[in-house]
Image 1 (cartoon, rainbow, N blue to C red):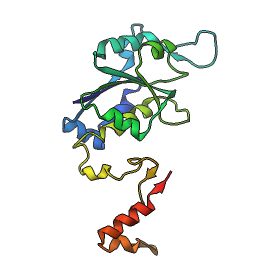
Image 2 (cartoon, rainbow, N blue to C red):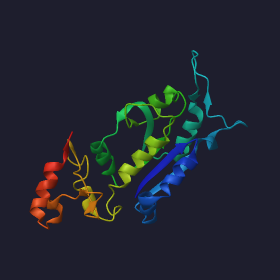
Image 3 (cartoon, one colour):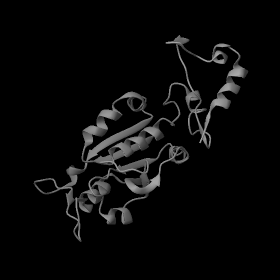
Image 4 (tube, rainbow, N blue to C red):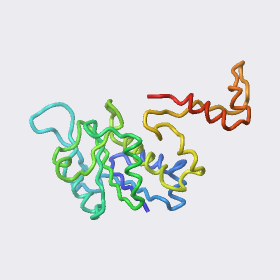
Length: 216
């Protein structure tokens, strides 16, 4: 079974999302395990300090190496893949997500970055995969961590109720987005569903969907 361990200083942000929707169902079906850890658990001072000022000066704070090292020392096994959220990392794509989902027994540990970043020694010595979800800056790595977990989990067999949902969705084919989708009613406010989708002619419907898939 695939397992995720997410290390964060805001565990409630992560926990609420993974207890909802498809991720909740995947856990209930025992298709995936997701654990959330408060990084402050691995601190030793009274203030549970996880950050400090940067050497050399400059604005902001930097996440310390010691609590991260201790967290990994406790959670990591020989098979673990340690990931970290960072704007400098590889941009996450559907093809990369599919690659990561192929190992059904994988153990991913995800470190959520914060502040001005994480001590570079973590990147250099403790991490296997650095990733970003886009060319912009967020206040923290919790959202990217959830994106990684969500995008991988939904590809695990039997997680989605209908496996056909994966076959023609956006990015499942290189350079393609999914075609437009419609549901009831057939007409609303004068806006009509295309006639071909109401025809019952599956060959014509397939042709229409292929034609209207958006090319990137």
